[in-house]
Image (cartoon, rainbow, N blue to C red):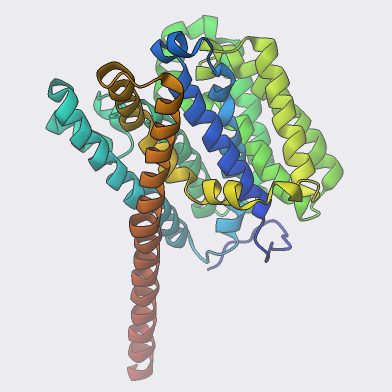
Length: 360
């Protein structure tokens, strides 16, 4: 049986601003990783605000989840869709990163670590991420699990109420953490969605507003999400180590304003070829840029004595090319291959059931 969903006027046309924002978020994160630590000494500056680029990704994930839900008939469709979208490109980038690590620092690689990383959940196997950028993937997976629970239990129609209750729970969970400091530290380290859920919920609400669903109520809830996201700055998120609370509050507010402008069609000037291209390859770029890119940058500056600025440009060009190749030859083909296999499997199953009914 198909689950009831909130009333939606499905977005038929491609929301190009979303791809442009993805591209901008990817650039923020890449510049952050390439300009901090030892590279900041060579540059004389660091782009620490880029750490907040993941906040944009989380809002976007909340927004696009309804695009996925609107196209599935039952919960297994959702699982296959998310698997096809996330895992093939990830496994490819994981393999490339592991090979690079085996050449540069083989002592950091083990079979247990590699196998644990293939799940995107190495922390549950007491292993570290092969690439430190991978931490956001588990946040996404747990969010998808939350959506899956709503689908399976038939409560996806109550997603706004569920999101509000969960956000209130998260605030209270952090507010009373002095009563259970050990458990709080354990939970926020293992389940980092507890530090970032309000951003996903903002994305969900932005989608509903764009479709004309309870605009006033959902706008107020977005304000509540923004407050919650600001409150969580010091509660376990990574941004607290690079930007001050007030800087993060301002950036989060700016991101929410940008999204509000986008859903009302005020940011179409962002729909340029470079940003749309970066948005298209943003997932692969995010996965491949950090370990491989930083080692390449270090080799250029330390071994070959290339000036940091041309070295930075060359490194960004290489990881962008790598991301494009992975997107073109792995991510997109694998996505369609898995989706087509699943579609054909369902059709064969339907035909078989029809024949059984006819025989009976």
